[in-house]
Length: 157
Image (cartoon, rainbow, N blue to C red):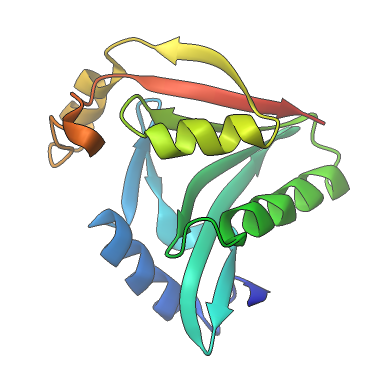
């Protein structure tokens, strides 16, 4: 596996990957529409094929992971990508790395807690607001769980 920065050289390929994984290149996070085509991040390759991607943004002294995808779970791809973001956040003197997940994303909830992130807030019924901004957000998520809430995780640095 080779990990590279997102750059102008691979941006088109990254944007196609984002669209294939998220069915859009925009994401609603805490009521804000985020354009994922301009975010910083890291991409994991195997034989020139994307097997993982993490996007993030730094605002003030906080680093926020916007998306994390691993096409091969339990192979260390997600962990490697998150560790790269933590390195960038530390280098930029951020006080924390945070992210939002949804209540149906059981795999992400497990993944982040096992890597030292704490669940710090639940935004009750926040997907109602998100659907007003992006109506394509489904009502039912993974494991047939009603998609309703955002959960905030953070790791203090």
